[in-house]
Image (cartoon, rainbow over the protein chains, first blue to last red):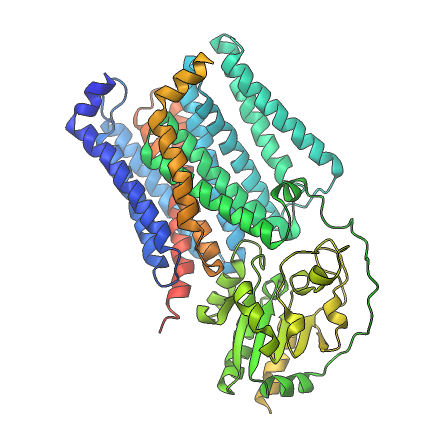
Length: 470
Length: 101
């Protein structure tokens, strides 16, 4: 019967529309690797999504060869219309600083959809419980509840639970999930019992998603978000496996692979293993090792204004503190003001600056900073000795030379932006608090360093008017 | 053992696609500059909404109330993921684009 179906012209068109859609996804992602073509890439990917939706709606046949009924078509169109309106409004209204929450939320809905599809497919054929279906259910559920918790955390609605025992709880959950999957597949239970087990699996997976994300927080958020993103892709691919649908499999796996790469890059940028992030054994533990020599020296606004105005090269190193203070616009005002005085200003972006991979770039782009001025860590570091002034705004651990000098430091070995090599360093900071890693920053005690205490936005606003009045 | 062999044989095509997609995914993504990581992630996230096709198939052939309710919910959530994801990505990329001149 399946052979009969594939021989019908409509089925052939449908199958090949999936291939075309898969190609469009690949082209879309490829184009998204350059700022000039990225928007076009997004358009390609979106078209690659709309095409199989239309062909499926028109050409899909169930096992008995029946097309989708008219009533169902109308229901589908209405649901899609509703989802599109709600989704677009949310996407249009969201602030750029809240982008990580938004992406987490959309990720949660995708995961939930995959889990729901896998669940329904199971109940349709309880006798044919297959591994991929169960995996789709488990991974989709974890991605859903995990992303909802990540959303809540980023939005400040959910707190962190740092506790050593969470590690063991999570390991236990993982073991139970594997055990239940094996029981469903090979336990030899009747359909009724298996259905109970599958619903149990759903519940455990949802709970596991919560307890998995709960203990992770702070600077680890970029890793978690990209990991959850990758899980949603895998869940969609598993569901695609059930339908033997190439567009779903390829699309899902592409996302899974992309998420995995970003996750590993984020881990590398923090010099930590993925396991280490998930177990969350960082922070708080490392006591201060080396004694810091030297003293803190402050600089007045006037001196800072003079220093900057007579520099040739200035590098601004932004951290999440800049975004928290909403200081990205005033930062751009500062850089264009200096630019008009002939000073060359660049931004040095550490890979984990912000709350999701590349978040700082988006925030600066929103403030109209041209992307040519945003330089990645590896590209700016060789040039740092030629920089007259490095301004560190709301960043801490990513410029701490302890990463090079102090083998006992928890951040030892982490790639940092070499602010300490610049001829002068100005650090804008609220107070002498420590960074996420809870360690002393050697840079503050450097002879070339001058501190400008105060709120990032307020300080920069005053600095701008100081430079203007010169 | 026999189960495993049957599974591997019956799903050979899908397994080929999965394995090759992983390589393709790594290859396509690994050269993306970190400037674009957030939009890329959000764009990829929208693509994972491809589960929407599963939702269409389910609602298209729904017969029981359970299938209708859960299927409609799945389709609605997948649409949120797709529409919201692509729109938000476009919004971000627009900001990168307009600085060109």
